[in-house]
Length: 208
Image (cartoon, rainbow, N blue to C red; front, side):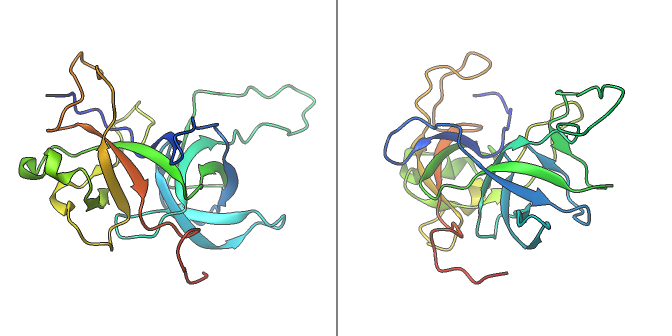
């Protein structure tokens, strides 16, 4: 059995087979938003933008159409003029639920992106080869203290043929060894290859 070490919705490659080139789009999370955000958290479109026209995003749930996943958080100290130098803390890679200012994130929003995501290890009857081309939703989870990467996981009980779920399963990540020294195999805490099935830049989506 693999270790239970979730990491959210992590970029893997392009649908064409090309390597992920680390390109992303800048979005704003306004100070009025009440959610915490972490690297690899899925996000959705949100109403509004800043005065420069940078559009808003919000934390996505397992039932939402997705805009993509967070791959970077902008340091608020960059570019600020100061007579006394500002210490830039590069260890902070999350956004608190209670905010005193706007935050900016970089989102992999390409509808043709391919990602990896760990399953929740719960509904073991679904964690089999027969599920490799089904669709799924995900469970939003908060990482443990000191671990600032998304803890969201595939909801194994949701694996089904329905086209209304926001993630498409595409088998397992071809990784011979996972953290802990185990092979990536069907079963609890496997790493799956997924594509966003309901993407608001690919489908007919109502504006917000």
